[in-house]
Amino acid sequence: GDGRLSPPEVLEVLRAQMPCNYYAIAEALPKLWSRWDLNGDGFVEEQEMTRQGGLLEYVRVNFPSRLHEKPPPPSIARTPDDWFTYWDTDGSGELEQDEVVRALIKTFELSTDLVQVQHMRGIVEAVWGIFDTDESGAVDRQEFLMPDGLAETIVASAGAMARR
Image 1 (tube, rainbow, N blue to C red):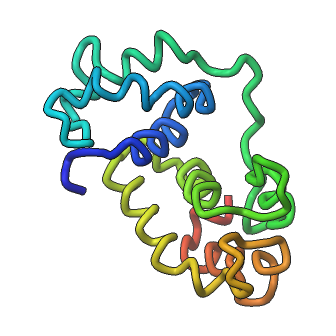
Image 2 (image 1 turned 60 degrees about the vertical axis):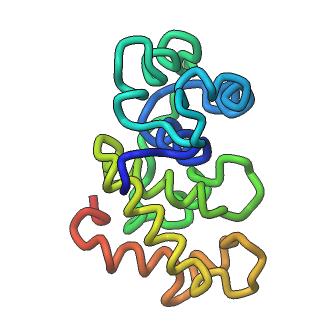
């Protein structure tokens, strides 16, 4: 990471790291962006996010979390089909890249480290075409669960972390 985030990256980080009303933030952010992007370069730096009155404080105050949070995710190693359903947040029957990134960050508790969040996003983006075999832009349940599919690859790559 270069120490700065674009609006889509900010949304991804907020969704992965903070219990907040993500959809309301996504709608409001374009109108509010200039509040934190003081130099107008299209990015916010860490200090603009974390300072008093910065973006994170604004989100905490103005976009509090949903009242009823989901239970912890199922184990991808023991019940990959349930894991898929849990993270298919829009109910489409497919996992889009952003859903997979968020799922991995939450499942492996990586959300406190911005570098790991950005790294995870890069990894998913780099390997996406291998698992999106029909090139639809999303991984459906069959692509996820097939032998050597995304589920098995995640479990094999994550080792003991995935077996919780």
